[in-house]
Length: 380
Image (tube, rainbow, N blue to C red; front, side, top):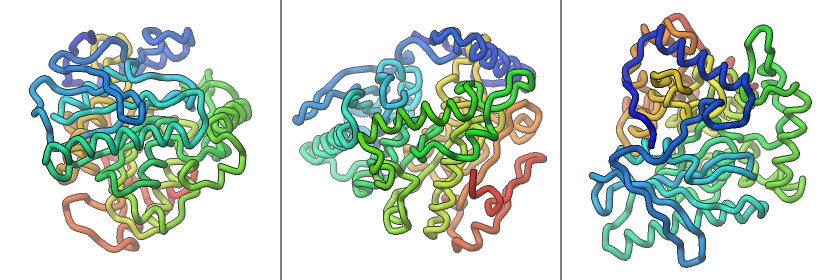
């Protein structure tokens, strides 16, 4: 069981946590403890059980011990792992945190050996089954949010594109949205040991990283022609599909080689005229950083991970402003005084009224001394 750590963090403490995580990545031992990945089981005060849909898809259900028997919201979370690794159990430290908002969190055991569309079909089967339970119990329409990270983000986003009527929101941590894997950020974020810059998770040279990513993508897609399929490869989605999506919230680290995919996808959402989505780029952060909230063994929590999770929980329950507020427990002063600052790239101030797409595209947002233009950050 994870050891509870204090949630408050000052700048010096958070710098130490970040350095501890980066040191763990450099050790490259491939073990959860050495890399800093949150390890252990579910958090205290949560319950975990396993269920099976009528079609035979198993899923893990994580609930808060104090949650209602039938809460008002459900999360379907799709774990990452390059389409070949990962499991619901590995994600318990994260999913049990999400369950603390009072919702059910269902994590499908999707196939890691069968190509598209089987994994997505299994995720949708779990979603439809949960909808049916509420209907049978006479509970009416339930708020369902789908989330995922990395390759799980590919499947989650594709599922929302394929069946948007099933979901009320989409949140993604470091999603792999462009399976072509040839973005400029593969080069601009290539890891450099001496300078300690670039992607600390995928440390191979850019060409090797791209080639291995393309191999994993083809393993999932089954055939190269599926790269043109907007459900299998979300970056290919056009305006007609994108306009049907529920609100989208994306978290990504500035050091990630796949950062450009999230930026391009959000640019396409803008171009489709949407104003209720948000991209949050955390400077200095790495791939799926919310999974490192326990602080990589530093004895303190990673403030950026806690902030992202706290905002995600607001988004899950439908709280106004859940996608664009300055994160809970981190003030703008703290954000500018630590090595990893937060840049918000929202397309609209959720809950604060809507503006035209053109107005939102021109708007600039400032956090501390960091200023970002949406129009300049469209492409990787």
